[in-house]
Amino acid sequence: MTAMSTSTSSQDPTQRPSQHLSEHLSEHLNELGLAARAASTLMARASSAQKSRALLHLAQLLTAQEPALLAANEHDLSNARAKGLSGPLFDRLVLDHKTLATCALGCEQLAAAADCIGEITGLTQQPSGIRVGQMRVPIGVFAMIFESRPNVTIEAASLSIKSGNACILRGGSEAFESNKALTALVQEALRLAGLPALAVQRVDTTDRQAVGELIANPQWIDLVIPRGGKGLIERISKDAKVPVIKHLDGNCHTYVDAGCDVPMALTVVDNAKTQKYSPCNATESLLVHEAVMPDFLPEMAKRLLAKGVELRCCERSLAYLKAGLPARQVSEVQIAGLKAATEQDWYEEYLAPILSIKVVADVAAAIDHINHYSSHHTDAILSENHRHIQRFVREVDSASVMVNTSTRFADGFEYGLGAEIGISTDKFHARGPVGVLGLTSLKYVVLGQGEVRV
Image 1 (tube, rainbow, N blue to C red):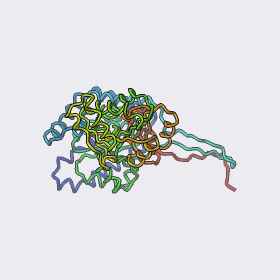
Image 2: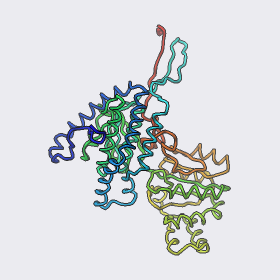
Image 3: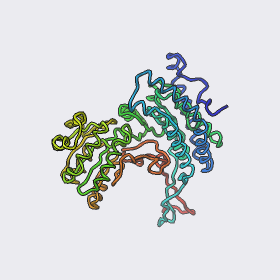
Image 4: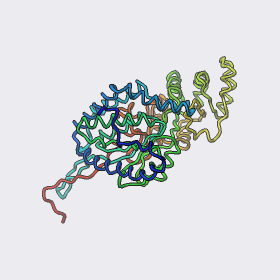
């Protein structure tokens, strides 16, 4: 059997009549859950060498099977075009050589990374004579519910393998063929390494009822991770009967402080907003200290307007830019991109060429604004004032806080995690980009030599 022809079931449920599918949906999910639970036991005791072999096989297959993967992706893209999908939503569906190469590199990096499973830390001697420590262990089985981006299949699967878990993947219907082909590669890689192929499975239907049933069964699932639009994440957070790792919005801020390196700030803000508009780590709101406004804001606005970015400005920045930009030879068309911000704009994750701008009096005002309006995802300060930087890093309540760099770096791959399964804005054990450690737990290990409690 070739790597591209395997499947988690012998028949594709989406090809059955709808009434037949409803009768078999619970049975299908029960089979997935039972298989995942059994596979998780085997994965938990898999050796580091086996997991690394699986990841290296997967990296090789992603390269060798690229033409077949691109063909499967083109099937999804053709359907998307026929349905009128465009812009960022269409872009998220695309698999290309660069994307697959990045996925393969992530697998190789994970294979080379140290295996944390089984590691015992914090071992301390107690007065009673016992020694107490904590061992890193897999979560067990997690479900990944995601939309659009088919590369999430590889990110989730590779992290699941490295962390010794089993996972059940449910991608969006718009990427059905791409996800099917990628899951087949993962299962082939697992087989080649002597690991259970069903440690990574795909919900083989586009029926929306599958998600509701999957996340409501703790006997199958220990953790659910939604990755997609706000509606999807809100629904899963509301209906799940197992723990959820999530983030609802990526309303990221960049604050330009007084006395900053203005050329550096211009470059960083440009990148943070325009390098790509659709990711959750793109800057959506720009805060500018009033002292640096004359040197920074007109030039920044000129650059962004020239790229077609609409600027939704506070009253002060709007008046300043409308008065000052024409003298800098900005076209009338570009000037039309200056709009007055509403209160709602400060909360918005645009995922589009739109940026809100607010002038603030000092770093304290910037911090207050961010903590009030942000989604606690990623926020950055551009400054040369060490005291301001320390205060910003300490007081901004976000999963990632950055200094003198672009918010676009808030990514597991860029953080050296090899891959990420998502970005969490929750405050429990997984926060920020979720890599291997976020898919593990700790259990206490107590070592003794016959001690008894008195």
